[in-house]
Image (cartoon, rainbow, N blue to C red):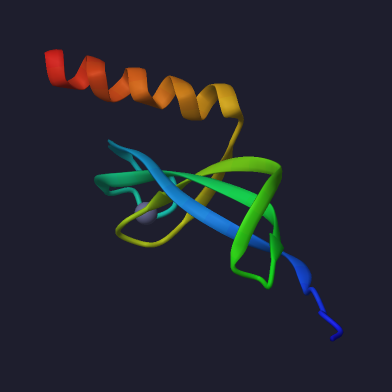
Length: 87
Ligand SMILES: [Zn+2]
């Protein structure tokens, strides 16, 4: 019996946080979704084996405009929303 294994990569997207600020694409103050996009090496395109690296971006819920973030900025965004909750 020959078993054929299919390996590939797949991007998994995770919502990290939602922050509110003025979008520099559409100029509206709306929710901005902080997303983590992880490229994973997969077996049969379904089973994630390990991560090949992550990148981060923020996406406007109004216009869909995407801005790349560094990992530090994405992690810092958790602080922004904590500050907004206090204020
Ligand atoms: Zn926008």
